Length: 276
Image (tube, rainbow, N blue to C red):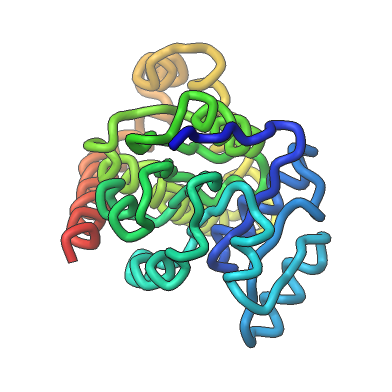
């Protein structure tokens, strides 16, 4: 059966799952101007708060997931990994071949997603929550029947809320451990830096502002200069100075090893979810 292309100019998007990830992506897409809110929908059964959240920025909120699927050209499954199979199988009869299916559920493999849905026009995407402010780091992998045009459409959709990368699905557990879970690690780091500033005598508001801007500035330097982080670190680490004293304390506390272990632990958990 010939796969009909989806119009990049008029396509509609529906979210199955109205949680924080769906909200982050939807808000980012609307804020970027990629789609007007009336071309986005989701379903909320009884949670008044989630209904109000999506309705507040113009998204269509239906009472059933079936309505979302019927109204959408691109259907994004943004439910928890533990319930994604149930969500897809319950909607299987509605998932016609003219719809492009996308999953953002951690640990769920394309072969399973395709089996549960009954067709192979599926794209797996691993975004992260900074999509809400247009700074997501997203990675995608195409299913067997997803076309290059489908991939370009999804890249454009998620690219409107940050940077999109393409990778083989076999590395997706590692992607989940790094960029999927990574914002939480950085939030902890910002909080700790701010606490350090308070301990050193700064007012809380100033400490938090300096910490968050310092992390943003450092990340931007890595992204825009193309220099290795180690080189940038060395550039600000003078002999016998303040920075090397601080770096020494981080090394004594196994700072780098702890971050590496966090990524590996999250990646391992992603593998466990995909096998359960």
